[in-house]
Amino acid sequence: MFRTFHSKDRASKAIKPSKKSFREHTKLKLQQKLDSPGSPSTMVSPIVTLLVGPDQRVFAAHEDVLSSSPFFATNLKSQFFDGAPKKVALPDEVPEIFSCVLEYLYKGDYYPRLLHNKRHNSFTLEDAYDPLNLGGRGSVESTIYHPWAGGDLLKDTAIYCAAEKFGLEELKRLALRKQGLQSGIPVEVILRSARFAYENTPDTDNRLRAYYLALIIRSRKIFKRSGTMQMEMEMGGSRLFFDLFVAMCQHVDDVVEIANKSSPRTI
Image (cartoon, rainbow, N blue to C red; front, side):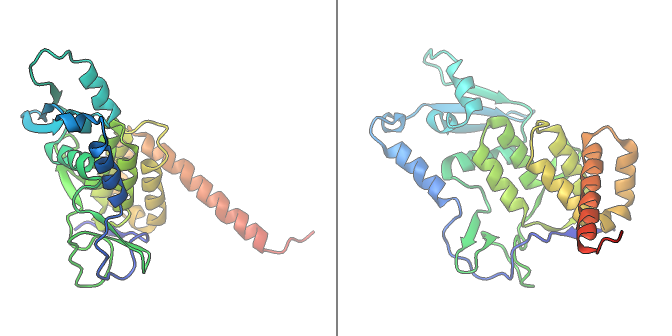
């Protein structure tokens, strides 16, 4: 049995949240854009066929909706209109993850939606069943099998990396906020997800990578006893462990500095 961690960032005691989505304003902006005079949608935006994954699962979406992504805007503009429907092949994408991206492009969020309870200033997820009143994600599934990673990943990490590819900064922020509601995830899933994050984000990323570094340091007692952690470090081959070493050194320096400030100095 694998040891698990419990995020200190999870939401406080679960209550019935207000039904307003945290990203409702995003959906409203999209609707205003689609309803505005001169919008391509008023003239019926062309349908684009998307072939996703190695099995070429078929998706369809409006061109103007897809074009809110710089990736798709560039791709679609490069296709000359000859009367035939435009197509985009995405052989390296996982259909279940891409479905979440597409849902976000249309609705401003993806299932389960992030709900904000203003009264308690807490967040929870739609349809989260939480009989123990732990808050946060409740029973909503937090992992997904990813064939390129060879195992389960944190779903929100996979969505964050897809958003990085498609140039969707707001989706990256949303995925990271949802991931902060995680708890009880096996060490092996955390490490596999961290590796995946490092492999699919640029070195300039200072959010998702920092999340994993902070998580491992905060839960260091669990990771220190983990055979999975030892095996991953012996395998190496990832900048993750160098960054982790630097972050640990900075953490130790901060602790020493605080201790020195709180202790009287003698001559």
